[in-house]
Length: 149
Image 1 (cartoon, helix red, strand yellow):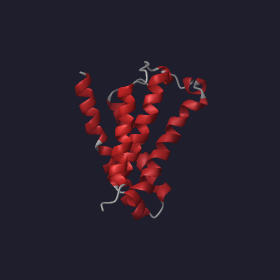
Image 2: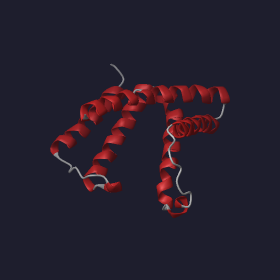
Image 3: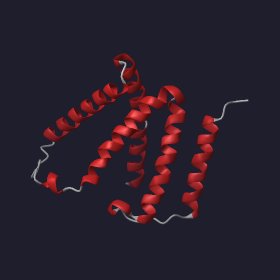
């Protein structure tokens, strides 16, 4: 089961550079990076609303929105930063370098989150294998960024 979910996640991960490329082209046409990001997020929000409607997801009590600690909304800010920076970075770095850098950063923060069990996640201690994985990702990033001789 875990292997199937991991493979599905890899497949979904293949969409990220495609999304970044499409958003960069959208931004070129619109001539404004924040407008491009806004359109992308708006379409995403409409897609999620459609899924919620078709799944008949109970909307629940909207009063709960007032009880949510404000820092939980930072996920949306971080998503906007990720999409906005991918729009900015992909034409400057290329898809491979941009994604290698993003994945490296994601793994570093994920290892820290797992180690401390932040966000009520199970803890997985930092160990030599995880450190080796991080080192290998940085090595891969170096090889991707390095200009051929």
